[in-house]
Image: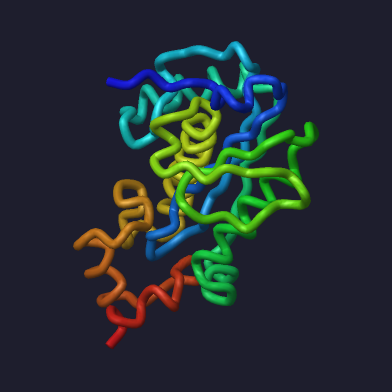
Length: 199
């Protein structure tokens, strides 16, 4: 397996490079959660990798390491109303900008997971496909976003247990879709995502 690196060689002269990622773009219910993380240049920990490649227990361990090690970090929510009003792409960009603006340390460069990003202020950025499997800072952002969102959906599950968000986290699993058909949507559902279900 390829070992993650901290920042690209061409950015090695910089001290504050932020990694940005999101979780929850494709869910039927709940928020998009975005995160921005600035790690020390010498950060190196093999537990930090793409959040999808870690068990829940490992993700929580990694979460604690990131919180303790980061120069700065921010985790932010964009709710379903915003997603419905703005569309999912623009809501994601809004969330990423929100996370960057909530950093106390101004990044000198931004590494973004994916192939698209609306520029933030006048700070240079680089889009990286599979960035959470390439750079520590993006992987760290994915872990903070994933752990935060999963915990949020588990708590939301207590209010709406019929939808089984504790296990499906708001994604379009068979049991979740069946529950929507039987009980209707909640205020936490993205109505624009339910058009083909509520027919």
